[in-house]
Length: 145
Image (cartoon, rainbow, N blue to C red; front, top):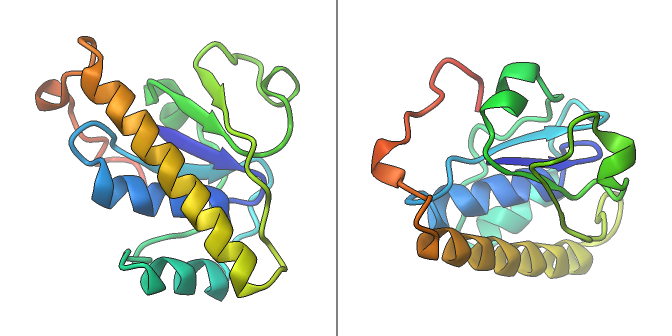
């Protein structure tokens, strides 16, 4: 599962951290940005930690081809329609999630709660899908997480 937002600084790192803890049985999460900021803001990390999630190993990176190719589902939170953002958008699912970058802690918390709910819904859908076989999935250990 590849979570993408614009800068890979707020939304997609949050989704990765949430999925890593709450849906590890059906999601191997990675995140990337269309135009990576290069760092994850303190408010992103603080929001996750305030809600009991680890912000360890979160970094802002771009999309690399092997990661894209290996993802079964790509979640686009960039705000750019998938048809404009990606050449191959067949496996892209769009989530309309506001970007909290540069705002206050209250909006970060609101966005966190929305992403947490969406990750939970996605994980439930995957758990019910006969195509999802977590026991046979091989981790992508040779790619950066």
